[in-house]
Image (cartoon, rainbow, N blue to C red; front, side, top):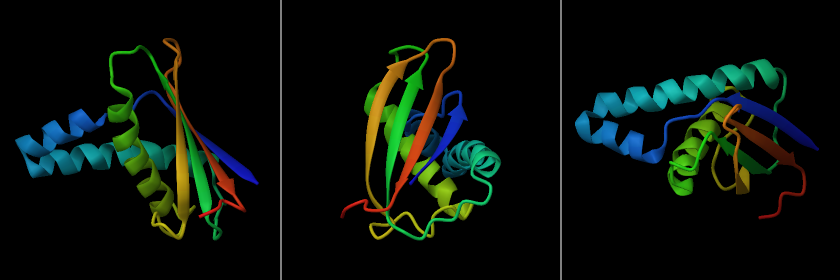
Amino acid sequence: MEHKVVIGGRLDNLNDYTRACRENRYKGNNLKHDNQKICEVCIKQQLRKVRIDSPVKLHFAWYEKDKKRDLDNVSSFGRKVIQDALVVCGVLKDDGWNCITGFTDLFYIDKNNPRIEVVIEVGDAGG
């Protein structure tokens, strides 16, 4: 079984977060909180009553508007806030090894519709 959530636009990247943390720890916390809230809104709208108790694999498709941001900077911070949002919203119990057994990242360019598509693969997710 699979569930899908689409987050419109782009999240900040790891460089943005690192820079904010170096400036002021509160600024870094606010940046993470703001990005996580964006994800939570989408999750609450699209996965309203989804509660998953089995281990999952997460498949991320990152649709960037251009190639200006490094792939690892886009995905690393984004995965963190999305996984945290899935837990806060109650879709997943936790984001540890027992609940998330792995993830994949694919990257695309869509200058007219940047977004993040997350497919949650439930069931025999391996481990």
